Image 1: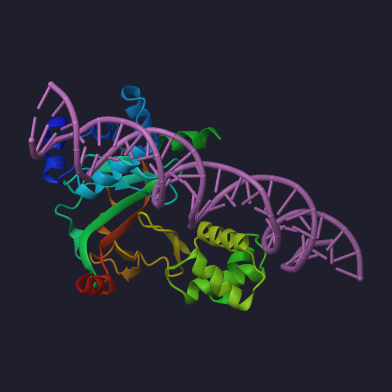
Image 2: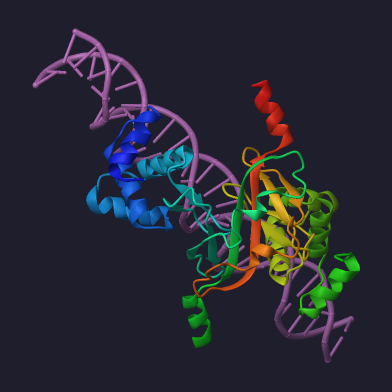
Length: 144
Length: 144
DNA sequence: CTGCTTATTTTGAATGAGTCAAGATAAGAT
DNA sequence: ATCTTATCTTGACTCATTCAAAATAAGCAG
């Protein structure tokens, strides 16, 4: 999944061109799980210094809409991306620094997916975010 | 809860002054569940035209930190606020228009609160967001 | 392989929710 | 009633993200 070969398939299937920026962006997302846009841009620049930030934004948006990557944007923090998808995992977010970690669904096959009252909404996903303080920030807090 | 009297208690308990802007903001949040900041500002202005947007931002932030109101900010949408708190309810969010509705926790006492692996995070809350399309947008989509 | 069409990219400016900071005001203690 | 200082007003500013026009290159046709 999400190998350079695989992505070519996905893009072509969607009638999208396979371009250097797109391949570079996808590789960067795969190599830097939970990275924010700026990190992705830096990573892409290491190999392709001339790729513009706009191209990165466009690629990230495209991949997100194609379902190849997933955007995560917790309260008050900027967007982050990950290429691990389709396995219904969730995230722990640090209230202080915004750092993320993956959490497998603890209670089997998405028990929360069925809302008690859906208010007429057509629900297609249940997202769970665990809020807390990461180990690093806990240590920082102790130091003062 | 959250009556004008009650809030006076809360503010004083936290050594905070009871000011017109603060009382107005809290009333506005109570009267407009899930309103965004601009809606709150407009509502406040109806009674107190001279209150600045900064005072509203400050009040919202203060109340949020005191746990009197709750901030909600789904992917790609601006912040919204609600004064219904402490009952562990969740939200359905419309992917298209960003509208919100309340959903009671379907599976009793927060079953998702315990992550399978907390990665050393000190977790204090599990937030569940149901994603879908609201009735209005479903109708719009049919019309084309 | 060469040229052509047009989807993508580049470039550089613009947007807008939210924040910062200095001086003015008013809550509430004395 | 006066004073102290938390809070508010004003207005500029930030910065992630988006917009738009001109330049480029993906990949199809010949």
